Image (cartoon, rainbow, N blue to C red; front, side):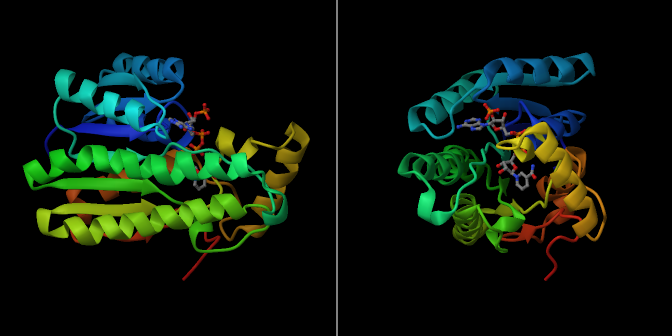
Length: 250
Ligand code: NDP
């Protein structure tokens, strides 16, 4: 990915998506997509202020019509998308016996269906160009178990499996698909469901338990994303890569 490209990033108004948008916009046009349209606009303004180019789009990735409208808008106003990072996500805590059906559905709709719909939207451009790179946002929790995160773990495992399917199906068309599996990263999602005091305690616990001794920063995940979208990772597809401070080793 040497030449300037259009890079679509979902969940780009906040956290890891935002850090990735700011980083990739140093050399590419970034489509900053998020259900928080105002937040996407703010990130776009930051990119433009730094000398880059970007387009903000409001999208709900769990809604097929919304994803298709986003793709149509990109097609008419910007052009083909040959690089994409699908990072939109939420976290709802809950043990299996107590998760309300609506929470389960929301987790699956945003993470699994949302990632599927976004991949489906960009793959035709990649087939036409005989080139493409997709990075889907999974988690360490796709492959390790923690209490109170059953729906999240199931969703992130499904995203990892979907990524492997896409990698296998579209390798002949020179389309690569990889997943990111971060450990704990200091963003709003990690705070969700915790009071300030609980979050302070959780940070201390992470520092104590993680081999690297601290939470990760969103920019540290963006650096790995940059590698996975670039030709430096040209021989990698169907992998899950873990910027995780050593939380999980295998
Ligand atoms: P943030 O909450 O900072 O960013 C997530 C963004 O996605 C928010 O702007 C959120 O909007 C947006 N979003 C949520 N639902 C939708 C939707 N239906 N359509 C479009 N946008 C949506 O969290 P992170 O940056 O930390 O999370 C990014 C991804 O990384 C997530 O998939 C998360 O599961 C994953 N991850 C995070 C880890 C961490 O420790 N932070 C570790 C491993 C994985 P809103 O604010 O309105 O919800």
